Image 1 (cartoon, rainbow, N blue to C red):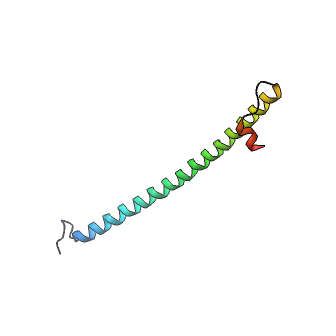
Image 2: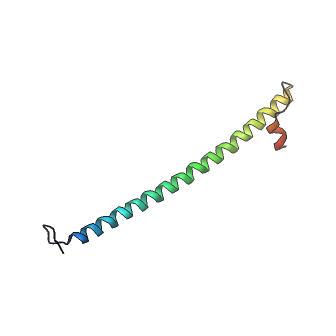
Image 3: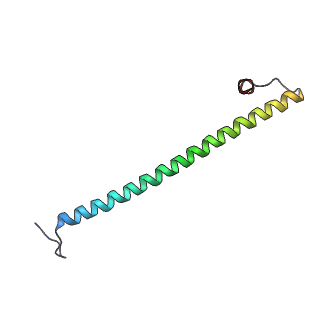
Amino acid sequence: MAENSEGVPHSENVQDLAGVVQNLLQQMQDKFHTMSDQILGRMDEMSNRLDDLEKNVGELMHQAGVEEPSVATEKQS
């Protein structure tokens, strides 16, 4: 087997490098997954808050006699 200038076989260097790269990719994938979950959770929360806001605005408009409640407000009631 061929050796490099340090006397370490090339295949061992390649295996070490492959292990380091694999570990780095796994860490990046884990972080990406965590961030994706956080983003999706925040988007769901924002969607719920917007739905509540739309419902409240529709109810206020209805109480003020400005316009009939929207379809979305009627569905949620």
